Image 1 (tube, rainbow, N blue to C red):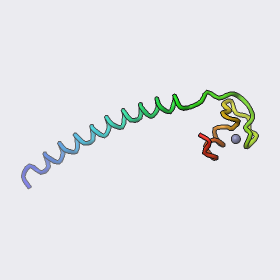
Image 2 (image 1 turned 135 degrees about the horizontal axis):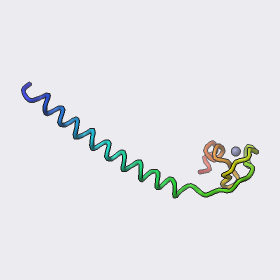
Image 3 (image 1 turned 90 degrees about the vertical axis):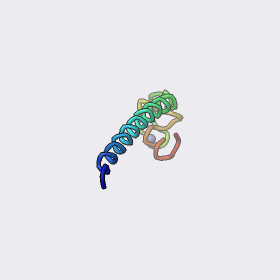
Image 4 (image 1 turned 30 degrees about the vertical axis):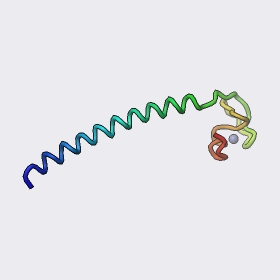
Length: 71
Ligand SMILES: [Zn+2]
């Protein structure tokens, strides 16, 4: 197929750079959103597992918030 290889390579390069760009933008946005969404928290003992955590949020450590879907 004449010209197939050249066309295919160009398409692949374009697609790859687009994906990389989108992924980078999405990651930065996700990190910004996540950083704003994380509550500051306070040091204390987790109400669920009793473990001391430097970042107690709503009485729960990070592991329990994750485990119990407390956010
Ligand atoms: Zn806990």
